[in-house]
Image 1: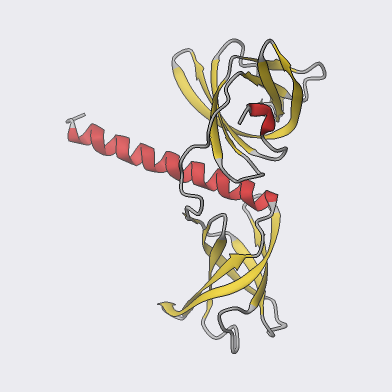
Image 2 (image 1 turned 90 degrees about the vertical axis):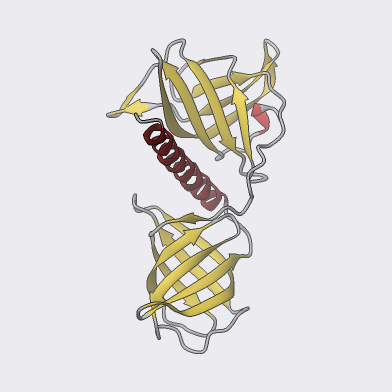
Amino acid sequence: MTINQMGEGSAVTLTINIQGETITIDSVVVQKYQEPYRDTFCIGVEPIQKEGKIVAIGRSRVAVSVTNTDDHREYKFTIAFHGMNKDRTQLLLFSADDIPPVNHRLNYRVPCNYHIVVQIGNNKKAVEGYLHDISLSGIGMVFVTGEFKSIKEGDEVSASIFDNYEHVYKVNGHLVRVIEEFAENRTLIGMQFDETPRAVAGLVAGLQRRELRLRKKVEEKKQGSGNGH
């Protein structure tokens, strides 16, 4: 796929090399441009900001990972050149690449502890708990044991997920597992999505990238310790 085939709302991670230092920044696709320019294709993403001001990245080298909302797969592009649009509301990224998706597991689960409010089956009461993990196909949730009555696999589930920035993600699906002895006085409940909303796909992609970066840092630290550094 070419970069302008990435769906609007797709999660973007920019890797930028500035004066020998590599930094990563999360953004999102806000517009895709259909007409090629100098044999390259283009997307507009949310600009990089610091303390409310747009940061210019000059001629720094940029690589981009995009998790496409249309197929939930990750694509990595090398950026030929970049710049701001006329009203400086978008960072424009140009690439000539036509690439296959990165071969990551589609349903890679990520641990998290976001607040969640859920209704299951015939239980009319909305029950509060927290997320145990999330993937593109579903979530694991933890509640105080006994909060739900007579639930079973296949029951319809509706849930609202609240992240640390007070964003709300609403999902619907069905119950796929119940582990009543998950922890002391805690029950783990698994839900599979009927359909993954775009906003949730973006949330999962961001959490997956953060988890992979943390794992990479831990591995690099272990290797450094093993070498006596």
